[in-house]
Length: 202
Image 1 (tube, one colour):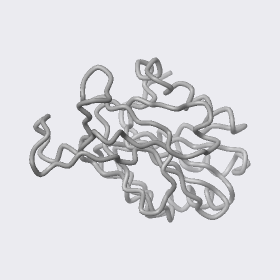
Image 2 (cartoon, helix red, strand yellow; image 1 turned 90 degrees about the vertical axis):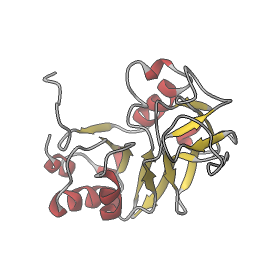
Image 3 (tube, helix red, strand yellow; image 1 turned 180 degrees about the horizontal axis):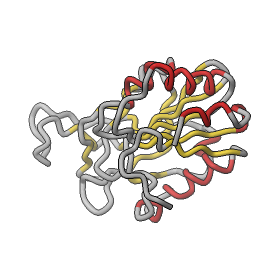
């Protein structure tokens, strides 16, 4: 509940998870996270349509950015085209147990040179006008939805769907396997809710 906790665990053995912050991180708070990453820590930032994750990514020195335009897929999807499937496209330790993940009204990631871990199918498109249909100015192509990049001695992962790890979504595709791989590869996991409204009491 406070970014001072980033100073406590050994960074090289730790994973921090930031889910869709509802308020901005101050310069001092972002600097704590940056020191954590540069010293060898791993941070996962998962968001879709809120505005505070991209400034945090910039403060950390990461290149990837979240694009808050809904992603749809008329061919490869779950309950509806708003639940697009994405497949692993990199032979990375984070994807070794997960070949397919399912998004829930997610966006996309502008990789800007970051390694793409998961990408949507060639039938997916960014729903620019959010009308739930493929229009003439919307092009079907693959889009990154999860990326990873090195920052200092550490790594920053970016996911374009804050609900990817909801209890109900963990039952879909290889979402649970992806989360287990992330968590099991670290000794300590920090769930950063310092900038999240409505934190559950338990």
